[in-house]
Image 1 (cartoon, rainbow, N blue to C red):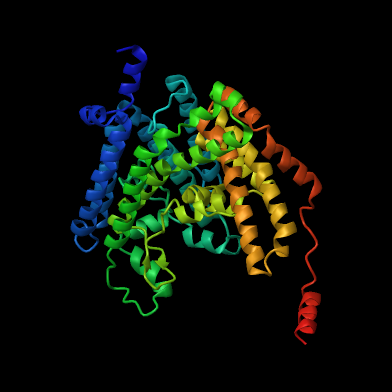
Image 2: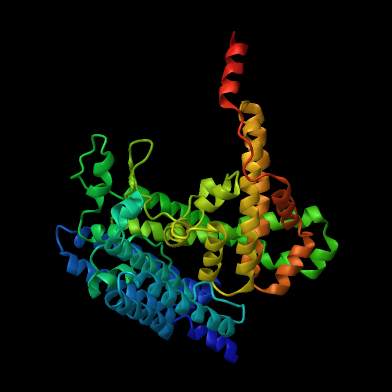
Length: 486
């Protein structure tokens, strides 16, 4: 075995499951991840039934949640898990010792700085051949939890109620957590590997047994809030989605590798439309691995009794508080914003709560930059997120300038939706391709093969279209409708 392969094996943590990895032809890090999540699913049911708030106190529930989470991260990442524990403890010291007026900035600086250093080291360790579940994943989740909690402590201790939004008032924290509470929140087994992030207040209410009551009492619609709703239906539905994603991965994803988009022979011989079609298919084929990871994590939370957000449109209990993806909304998105809003949802909530809602100017560019830095230091990430800035601004301008011309007729609106769906999906393919290619050279090769067409169209549209078009005179339109009716 060559030294590089030996190094990669070391990063996978425990090697007990290597025979399964070799039998399935799936990398060991992915097998470890899936097995931990499946064990976590079983542990979540046990946690809900045997360690319910009626049977165990908050201290026991906090201790078990943090112990299981710590075990998972050690099992998956071996000694690299030290990074997770170091960052957690250092930021807890900052939370307890820093002034409430500055704790959010110190926490953000240290957490993002530590993550960035680890991301830089990851580039040299893996040399672009990154594992699917390397040690930076838990660090990324930690950064979201650590920074959000610090901002919420700042809101609770230093800001006036009238200065806060409704959501900021609901989530504000006026007392720092104990070490056990902090470890449970940051390292709990439900979210340590792949997230998603959730607020400290929602999590502690879940641990104390107040989560369901607080979420359902606001809109009980005749529902007995003392009855504990069963998550079995929600968990079963999400596991079926996971099975579908696994089948898609083994049957489809492997047949359409992303790297083929920049294969020299393919780029030189295939027509532009063929290259465009393959980019679309390969990106569609790559999504289910994200769907699988996020949906399985959502199911683990639900199995533990966590994730109720209220009631859905049919009057049933909705288990989507920590859902990270809305698959149908993504696949049918007719706008860039709609796609972003339904992809990696909780990360979007984090970016909004610590950046977009906090900065006075240049909100969109700064939010995209923070997102790129959080994801890592691979150049492809920056190509994706920097490209997203003009595309987002252009999409807003196009929608404001043209959409109102197509909403009065059902058939015309249907045609408009089909066109905007195709444009959105192709634009997403163009935008996220560097995110998957990672390096500069393949990214530039891909952009050249696409003639930089999305960049050119976006820049021209930004220059030509007014950002705030004059709205139609609604009163005049109403009067004209009355005349036609007469």
